[in-house]
Length: 99
Figure: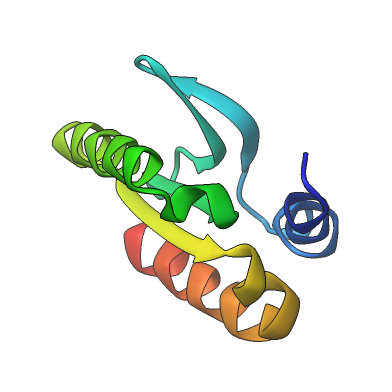
């Protein structure tokens, strides 16, 4: 896991009352985090995600995940580092809404 993934996992996701899996295989993809109860995927994006080729792959991945009924939440590593509470609040809001 990246430092940002570790922070999100140990300081927030692991403490939730719902099960969240790390590095979950869904179809042909491995997602960063997955909450089956809320049908929610959480992805953290580093700088490589802003290169055109990687950005296009992210769009294809998100389209596939959406097509099977999953909500995809994407946050940048910068979001986690500069607005951790805001990221956690947003994730919690989505999970509670989708349960």
